[in-house]
Length: 570
Image 1: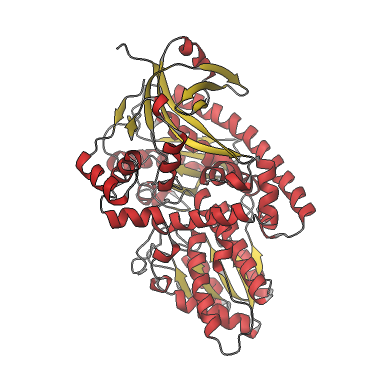
Image 2: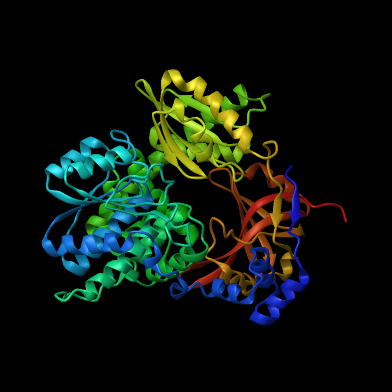
């Protein structure tokens, strides 16, 4: 049974925020627990305005990149966007393509490598084909920051390379024409949490300025903000921290998406069963994002790209149905692999104190190992690396716990790897089969050095305790002002004790519990907890996250159960 605790708060600080900002007690407490004790900083957080965004021109090389793109567009030079097959890479590619088409009537080329045949990032064969096809400006998005040899090769062939990325940067850095990445040592940009698509947005702000300053420009006023729906989708799906610039991007992007969803997004919403009027960051991360990702995981990410940039409703519906089918196939493959991985960990590491899980599978699907690694982390509370065999190579993904920098752990094992890259929480790697045991041992040693304390489930910490019959729709609506919620700005979590309700089983082993809150009936959803239905024969203590769901203009209170247990005796 996991331990519960309620976060300690300085009541004087909470009261100051409540009085200064004129917000409810719960909102003031949440702001305080997020470290926002300064009223002005807290007000900026609540406002989440793009006007508070740091000046894009501070980012190193951004004006050099903008000038080069404007010159290429003016002179008719061929531009190719070299993307990635995940949602961040696909939305980055889509935003660039749409912006240049809508503003200048130019359809730039987009190349997204095939996950299974080519793998992640720049490769020499693709570079040579693109340059032979006339590419003069090669724009990498969501990749390139560690591709030293590949960038040098492209530049030697006569292409100017502009890197737009957010991954960790190699030392030495690639010798690109321009390198836009907040993680560069001297990037100059104060917000380092942007996804690649967020960096694309900053670049387009500068491109707009350069276009408007061009004497011969007679086109429409460029509006980078019109693409913030896709910027928000890529930001949330890539699990970027929803603070600072990202939070403003996502809040504004949700408004754009809700007011006027573009053709492909509307089709995607339909198959994902979400509506524009109630679209949330959670929908982006758990409904829309996985469907775009499925195309790149199982086949060709170009299908997801075409869905996002297309204008024909019938074609968009067909593409949305196709990615929906791929997502269902992905779910089936994922379920099998999760079961196998968990069984192997329980069998092979039952009595082990190994600080990390490193497994290889003969028939595991390379495009799904990252998701499965996440499930292993959730179950065993230690970093996990899962590898799929491809001939004499192993290709895989790493996911980490919050207390281990997995990229730093891989740096310590570099001698065993052919290639790798990533960031603090996730990474990818390739190694030879015969190196597996040495890599596993070195990785466990590195994680053991980097980790503080033994592996194990952390205590669940609630933001507050409240009687459920006192929790109103207005309370939760007020809390949503602190959102959108996601990584680094988690949804509020509450504890309500001695709750009584009526459980109903749902397909898939889930549970719906009908409850009574301040405004009347509400429902709680407990995933994978159908077996705990008998608990509701008596009062139950609930640990949950409340949210507002909207359907056909009606708003209702829904509780997402994080844990539950029989009520403690009074």
